[in-house]
Length: 90
Image (cartoon, rainbow, N blue to C red; front, side):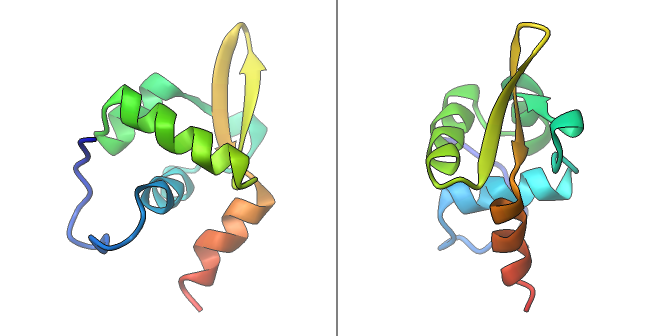
């Protein structure tokens, strides 16, 4: 699993939480702003297979939602996911 997160991301942070933070930071916070896996991979500099694995975990945790738009699966953070990210700042 390859990723290129900057030094601001704690190396002990679970990969799926790093991805959740990145989705929040790039603005994938509503269904209208959902992004396909390829675009998430570009933004996060993660391999597509790693993005898929982490998104699966985040969907199971109800932190990310998958929608289908124009025949493409897209992903965005749920309200629970936003709360999880913001809880790190408090």
